[in-house]
Length: 221
Image (cartoon, rainbow, N blue to C red):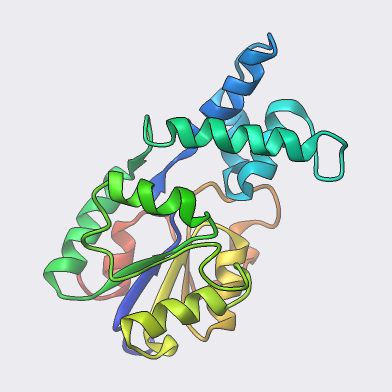
C-alpha cells in the first residue's frame, strides 16, 4: 500500500460471504414451482452480483422490461428472504482476515448494494454485526454503487477520511465506487465477478486471488 490505511471496507456478497447457494436456491425454487428442472449452482454463480435481476434472468430467462419481470422479481425476493441464511456462510478464508483486523484494532465495515431488509438480518445471523464498524446498504444513501456515496458514508460513520480506507470487492462497480471515493481498491478474484470485463481490466489498485493476500498488502502477515 502506498498510503496509510486506517480502515478496511468490504463488499458483502462474493467478497465477505458466499451467498450464491441461497440466491441460486431461490431461483431454483421458482423453477420447481413451475415444474422446471433444477439448474446447477455454476449456472447462477457469475450473476449473483446482479442481484434479483440476474437471478430471475438465469432462472426463467426474463429481463427488466419484460411484462412479468417485476412480479417475478418480487417473488424471487420473497423466496430468497425466506431462505437467505440456510446455506450462506462467511468465506472460510475470510474469517482469519477478520480476526486479524480485530486483533490489530483496524476497523472494518461492510458496504453493499443489498437492501437493508436483507443485509442487516443476514449480517446479524452470520455473527458479523457485533464486529463490523459500520454496515452501509444499498438503500442507506440516495445512490448505490458505482456511485461513491455509500463508501463516503461508511468512512464518515467510522470517522476517518475516505482516502485512508481500502475497499475490497468482487465487481466492477466496487472498483468504480472505491476509486470515485478516493479509496484504495482491491479486486477479489475469489468472488462472483460477473460476465463483463476481465477483473484485470477493472482498474483496481490491486487484484488478489485469496483473502490472505489482503493481510500481506496491509503488512499484517
